[in-house]
Amino acid sequence: MKLGAVPIIDSHVHLYPPEVNRDPVAWAAACGEKHWAEMCTRRRKDGQAVQTFPSVDQLLRDMDAAGVAKAVLLGWYWASHAACVEQNKFYADCVRAHPDRLAAFATVHPAAGAAALGEVRRAQAAGLIGLGELSPHSQQVSLADPTWRQLMALAGELKLPVNLHVSDPKGRPYPARVATPLADFIGLAREFPATKFILAHWGGGLAFDSENRVLRNIHYDTAASPLLYGPDVWTKAPSERVLFGSDYPLVLYPKTEMAPGFGGLLNEARNAGVTDAVLGGNAAGLLGW
Image (cartoon, rainbow, N blue to C red; front, top):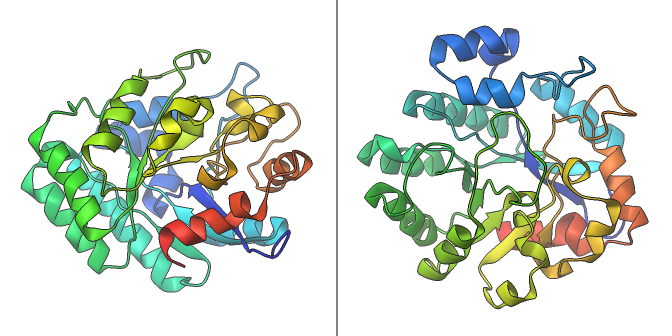
């Protein structure tokens, strides 16, 4: 179950309820989740799906095959409050069924106002331990929005880490890409020092900027790394701030793999000489395990 002395923790995994998995395209059309469909149900030029829609049992089998001890399930930046609530309920069920293998973050839509704040408290009471993956830019919410600011403050009060979707402004374009100005995330970390932030996808490159390392409430995950950066990326960020994350069930090596998994990314990290801290220790410390 581990590469070294510390159990491997994948800090960035997505799963969807059975009703989504049965027909993702139809579900998205019925529920008004156009952006999610453009991101998650599209196919590459060769016809290969960018990701699959595995069950909880399939996730656990894939974790076992790669020696991943625990996975943190992240929500999505849905277009509606209702979709957020259903995702959170599904994740609470997953965690109750497999508390030794799975943990989960809650997702919210700030446009729901007081209902979003109530959903955070309800989700925490149901066993969820963070917020994310959130993306106010994708949900078309201003960072000055009162509810968004209250959510960030509440996360700090409740000691819930917040995972935020970040894209590299220098990265290549892809369907449904939304710009996420990097200065916004630095501003959030400074404005809410009591809140722990995990900036997904190497923070869109912020992980490599030494000027931002003074902000002790920022961590970075490695989600989708092979689709964004070369294998040398593992040596460019401070190891004490990096959390291993795959973005499962995204297919990370489409030229050589047809299905998602954890082994390829773990091998890439291992070949780069990453520490046990990156593979699990940092996540365990941040999440209080």
